[in-house]
Image (cartoon, rainbow over all chains, first blue to last red; front, side, top):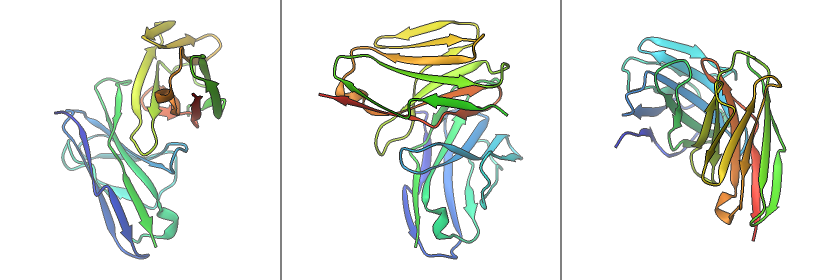
Amino acid sequence: EADIYQTPRYLVIGTGKKITLECSQTMGHDKMYWYQQDPGMELHLIHYSYGVNSTEKGDLSSESTVSRIRTEHFPLTLESARPSHTSQYLCASSGPGPSGEQYFGPGTRLTVT
Amino acid sequence: GENVEQHPSTLSVQEGDSAVIKCTYSDSASNYFPWYKQELGKRPQLIIDIRSNVGEKKDQRIAVTLNKTAKHFSLHITETQPEDSAVYFCAASIYKLSFGAGTTVTVRA
């Protein structure tokens, strides 16, 4: 079944650790996105990609980085986690055309102690 | 860039009543307007969308209207049920979505 997958779903990690949040999609979409969201609050776009080897920073400044080496895979990396990074991270992808329907993954809830 | 404002931020309605959420956008070039519903602990789910060449779209108890001249669009939920309780987000898009801040809807039994 076509879907968006995120791992891990929950992560508790200490300050200063390097972490990578995984996102993969079997939707066949070219465009992918990362959002940061505190529970029930605004969705903040932190990175997006329109295809392989294309990455852009979003509207919210973030200390994370992303890569897009394969169409279906869009990992997000934090080199040195801090308590301010505690949040939920949602991956999304969208279909063809400038205004394709966008679908979200289940999210990774990150806690940095 | 696009700026989307959403009102109200919270909405409490009696079961069976209607709920209306309104959004305005700033960029007249925006041509796609989706609405998402996010239940507690779940991912946002696309519930209805409208494109700029259409003024109104309906799907069972939910409907969306678009006024391009005034640059605003609205979500209407009729005959509300407890399962409609969630956070609703509007968005506008030219090439990527800009989201409103969300409306927390509570349906009182």
